[in-house]
Length: 233
Ligand code: IPE
Ligand code: IPE
Ligand code: MG
View 1 (cartoon, rainbow, N blue to C red):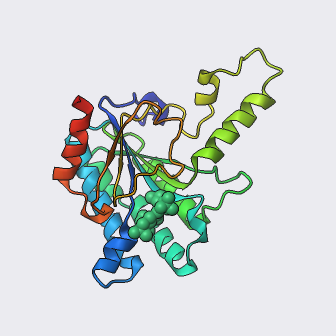
View 2 (cartoon, protein in one colour):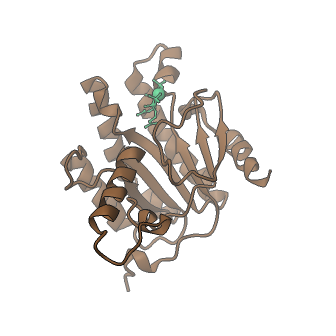
C-alpha cells in the first residue's frame, strides 16, 4: 500500500541546512566559466546527500536558488535551472538512499512566484517518486527567500484574525512553506562568507553556525564531519 506523505513520521537525527556558496569562485580559480562551477556544485550536492544520510542526518535543507538570484545573467540562470531539473531527476539515487525529497519556495500559483514550469514538473515528480522513503528528508530551497516566506505567513495570520486563533509563534510556524519541518540544528555556509543571505531566518533561531573557507564543490566528508562536531559542543 502506498502511504500518503504525511503518514511517514519525520526522521530522527539532526536538521542540517547548507548555504551552498562559492561555485562561481571555484570555477574562476580553475579558469572555467561560472556554469562549470554550478555543475560541480550540483554533483557535490549528490555526494553530500550520501554523506549526510550515512551520518544519520534527519533533515538536510539546501539553498539552491534565492528570490534575489533571478537578477544574474540569463545564461547563468538558465544553466542553474537545468541543474535543478537534473537534481530533482536523481530519483534512482534518492530511492537507493531512502531519501525523501521536499521543496520550499514561493508557491507556484502565488503572485511573484518564478519557478518555470519544467522545474515545477521535476519538483512534483521527485516529490511523488520519493514520497514513501522513510530516511533523510532532503529539502531544496528554490525561488526561496525567508522574508517573503515570513511576510506571507504574517499576512495569512492577519487575514485569519476574525477567527479564534491567536497570532502566536505556533500560528506563524504552521504557515511556513514547510510547516512540519523541525528547527535547524546546524547551518553550514561555504566559501568564506559569514552571512545568512535571507535563508530560513525563522528556522535557524537556535542553530549552531559553521562557516568554512571551502567552496561548495569542495565540501567533503571531512569538512562535513567537522561541522557536525559542532552539534556536540
Ligand atoms: C552559489 O554559488 C550558487 C548560487 C547562488 C546559485 P555562487 O554562484 O554564488 O558562487 P560565488 O559566490 O559567485 O563564488
Ligand atoms: C546565497 O548565495 C544563495 C544560494 C546559495 C542559493 P548568494 O551568493 O546568492 O548570496 P550573497 O549574494 O553572496 O549574499
Ligand atoms: Mg555567492
